[in-house]
Structure formats: structure tokens, C-alpha cells
Length: 300
Length: 300
Image (cartoon, rainbow over all chains, first blue to last red; front, side, top):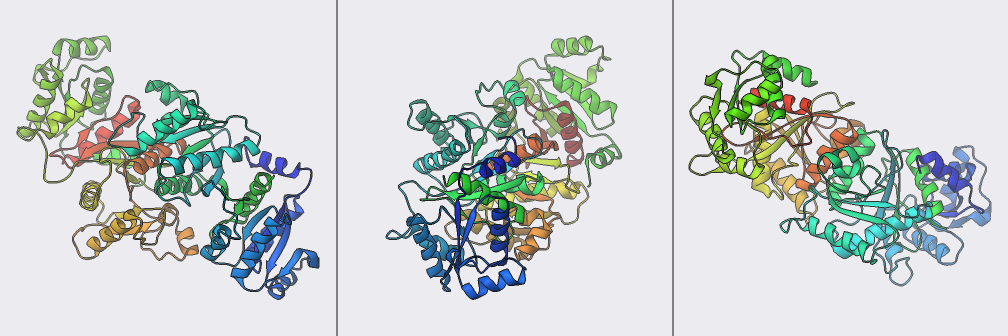
């Protein structure tokens, strides 16, 4: 996919709308994002939370009130989070979005062993960006969820990300496992992990993608530099997924793209029973909308 | 400094030219960079290496041959590296540049305990960039030399970098110690180090700069985002030095700037008895020249 316009088009071309459930929906920004998503045929929102407050926001914004079947009056944010998760379990909703509830409480409902949405797969943060100057969407992972992933966790982060690309229509996304070098160095565990992941890909343990690493950012992103450095690569200059060695590198990477490269971004949590939209306070309305559009496809 | 034009102007305004010595100077790219530097009054080059090969390159390039006092015939690259270091010790040269010699051999001569240029300070890589869209030069460190710096090593990396900014004329460069968050988290040693460095700055153990951290890239680089997130900062949006938690993060950061943000870059090794230019094969002629201009100022 070259850009987010194509993502939006793909979301809108779904046969039926994915249903989005907002936990603690008494949040003006969440409601605005949900209403815009509905208008653009990206998702059908359900609202779980303090119904009086929710309806007041609709009133204040001069919006048509949602029908009663789309609103669930559960004023306590913790209970609202549980209820939202339950609606996913019951098949009444396809994906989750956070409203006016603390992230820890919200994720607590998601990871609850009895009633939550955990799977055998590690949950990780997936972000995809439209960067001016790069010819297609690119996904730096994981800059928001898994602090110091070990080899197995990196495998899960990659598989979670590859699954998203498959949903977007890619047959074999191209994955670069980043380090500061292309050389495997026993003193740098990140390079050993990268080599192991490349091997797992070769022997079919991680499939549906092409993995290369360890590789430095410049060799991954520029075929010209890779050629100059004599780095032989199938994916150089055409990477879809950039795997960071840890959360700090991943977070810095994503934020350079958005803050300094003026990239647009969509972000969701993956690896749970359904995609989860959990944008931050500082997220723009556009980022929220693009995240919903992404989740809406991934939920199918 | 807003850009590299100002750096070049500052270098040219020095009362006398810094003298650059190239170890194993039988390298066409090194000679071209040195000759351009001389033409632009950035440095006066000395050549140590295989004199026959050196003079042949001058001949091939139709350049005026250097006078014999500027050429030292030491054909073996290891010996040439030692000789270049010796010239610095003797006060005959002010800074070093690598020619056609393996990095390890070259650095071996620099760090040699008997005859080298080691100091009590850790050696680290310093890079400074002109990034389109940012209002001044900025230095991401260390992406090339110190793999997993501990607290003391981070202190040295910061002091090395601050020293460079003082040479550039800054009274108090602004230093952001990056992590994925602004919150100190005992499970993330990078955040503890960042807090400790900030404290060392407050109690005068690291002086001549303003240090803040832990801080995420977006809060460091955007005053608007810092305000939205309620991050109270003296330096947000006006940072001079970005300290990476480790070499992978630092390397990825620097390369996103140069490859994806089309930043121009100058890079030197600092913390030794003199600045050391050690650009890579993939470095552009412009990067080599800017690195010489930077080293030329720092050498004074």
C-alpha cells in the first residue's frame, strides 16, 4: 500500500462494517473519532460507559443521539472495560477502543485470564506510517508495549506484524531486523537474535514473510547504500516492517518519523483476540481515525 | 549554529589553519577531501603513507604535488598510523584522519597505551547534523563507538559532546537523555541512568550544559507535544544533544536523520588527545569535508 488513502479505500470496501466498541465512551475525542469513522463507513461504533455523560457529549456536539441498542450504560470505567471485552466475546463487537479510562485498568480487562482476550501470542504494539519520501507504508515495531523482547517475543512481534500485513493484502511482507551493524557479533545479543530470526524464516518456523537481519537502518532502507557497503539483500530499499531491538529504539524510531519526518501514523495493539485501538492523549484526530480504519480491517 | 554554512565560516575564521594528518594517505577519497579542505582554508593536510602511491594519485588527479615537508614516506599502514599519532604528539599535526588502513589497525595506534592518544576520558563518536525542518544543528550520540554505555560512560559521552559544543561557541548546550518515556521506571535501567545524569548536572558533577531526562523523543523535540503531555521542560523543542540509550538506538537515530530526513552530517571521534576523522566507505565527499571542518575547530 502506497499511502493511507489506499488503506481507507480498503476499509470502506469491506462487505459489512466492523463494529467498534468504546470502553468508558464518555470521552469527547473518542466520540468524535467514532462518529467520523461511522460517517466515512470505516466502522460502526458501540458505546459502553456512563450513558448520561455520553448522551450529553452528543448533545453538546449537536450530533444525532445513537439508538439505544448501541449504548450500554456501565458508568464504572473498570466495569465498562469488562463489558466492552464481553461484547467482543459475544460477537457483538469486532474491535476495542479506549475511552475515558486509565490504560492500566483498560488493559487489565483485556488481559484478564478468565474473561479477557489474551491468546497464546504475545500482545505487541503495531504502528504503520506514511513517511514523506518513502514509497509505501512502513511499520516500525515495537515502540510501545514490549520493553526488552527476548527471541521468542521478537518472533511473536514479527508474526503479529506479518498477520496485519496479510490482512492488508500483502503476500510476503519484507521484514528488517535492525541493529547498528550487518555483522553478527557475539557481544551484541541483538545481532544474535536477528540472525536467529532470519534462520527461523529460512527453515519455515516464521513464514509468510521475508526476514533479513541483523541489518543497519541505512542498508535496510537504501538499496544504494546497501550496494555501496556490499550488503547483499533481497529487501533493501523496499522494507515493510522495521523490527527494533528494544522499546527505546522502537519508540525513538517511530517518533522521529512522526515528529521530524512529519509522517502520518496508525497504531493498534495486536496479538489479542481482537485489535485494540489505544491512542494517546497527544494523538491527533487523524491518527485516531487512521487507527480505527486499520483496526477495522485487521478485525476481519 | 543554525547550519553547516556557519560551521564552515567559523572554521575559516580561525587565526591559523589546523593541521590534519592522514594515516595511510594513499587513498583517493581522503586526498580529494584533504585538497578540498585546503582550498577552502579548513585545514592544512600532511600525508603519511606510501609516498609513491600518494604522488601517483596527485598526478592522476592533475593536482599540484605537495611539498616534501608535508609528505612522510611510511608505506606500512600500521606504521603510518603510528607515525601520524607521533606527529600529533610532536605538535606537528592537530588532528587525525583515516586513509587506506583498516579501522582496527588505525584505532590500535590511537589507543596504544605507550604511544597513543588515549586520555582519562572514554573515546566516543560524536556526530552533528543539519536536519531539514529543525532550526539548528543537532548531535545524536553515540551511534558508532560505545555499545552499551554504563552510567559513567554516558557521563563521558555527554562531556565529550558538551566539550565540542563549547568549542563551537555554545555556553550551555541543551542535552536530552532519551528513553521511551518521561517516567523513571526501576524496570528500565535507561530511565534510572537518565535520572542520575540529570542529578549529576544539578549538583555540578556535569557542568557547562543543561541535562534533562529521561525524556521521549517527541517531548524532547517538540515544545507543543511536551506541553500537551504536561512535560515541564527548559529545553524542549530546542535540544542540541540527543543521548541515545545504547549504540543500536543511536545508530538507528542517526541513520533515520541522514537517510530518511536527508540530513547532512559531520562525524568525529572525541575523547582522545585530538579529534579523529573516521568516516566510512559510504560517506559522501560532503560528509568528509564537513567532518574535517568540525575536527579543525575542535582541535583548537
